[in-house]
Amino acid sequence: MAPVVISGHLASWRPAAKWAGLAAALAIGVAALPGLARADDAAPANPNAPDKSGYTLLNPTPDDQMRKFAPDRPTKGFSVRTVDAGHVEVEMDTFNETYTRYLGVITRSIQTFDPNVRIGLTNSTEFEIQFNGWQSSHSESQSGALIAQGAGFGDVVLRTKMNLFGNDDGPVGLAIIPFIKVPSSAPVISNGAVEGGLIVPLALRLPQDYLVTLMTEVDALKDDLNHREANFVNLVGVSHPLPGIEGANAMVELFSSVGADRATSPIYTLDLGMNFRLDKHTIFDVGLNLGLNNAAPKVQVYTGISARF
Image (cartoon, rainbow, N blue to C red):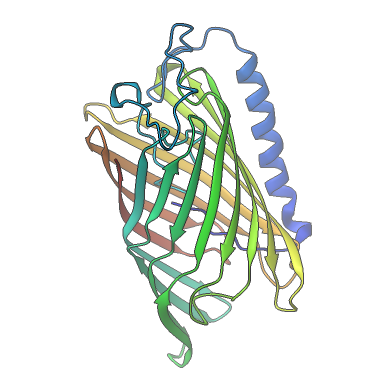
């Protein structure tokens, strides 16, 4: 699932900076290790692999040359892999509920049917359009007094994912994902601002079928005074096949979102997820996110499905 970005105190960015430094050190160290073994995500680089650079939106990649299906969900990290040229993936929540309690305000939010449509343009580039589905939000005080409520369809997010290396195989993969949010929903559900940023995921395919995702993100968000504030997202995630269950994987992730807007606190969460491969082109998933500080949502639970065509 796509990360929720919430800005916070710039002075509190130190934990996120430590995570980013640790992630960078780990990435450099692992990239320097020779002969990493195969991970569930991909096989080692194959010099005899077919050349797929000529495939485009109008000249699709043949089915027998498509890379392994790797959706950008569950959890908040993004895969480094792009959709094969000429193919389409659809990923969405079937149900998503969030419970937050902070500064005397209790908020319950529900979201459903929020398709992210990913279209393969070339062998290493895709275009995405995410519709943030039907949403409902209800906030009240601890005494039960209504503070705010709203319902409607969420904003639209446009992204372009470009894989730089490690798209099909190899021990390391890297991608860049510029994006922009186009406001298209009702008050309470949206702040009505055009916002954007850049996401950079790094995948490390380790021995024993472990996949480590290190991701950093920089956003330009609107604050209450209509100023643009920088926001920094960092996460570290690990996934591994579930023993004894064919086509099932489990993942755990540490997430932080910290920015320059002093009116908003940083967010730290522990995210857990599992996915189950129904067939070669369909994956079902479930997830649970737990808040690690007072400002973070206490609990977020969701289910989702991904399919490619």
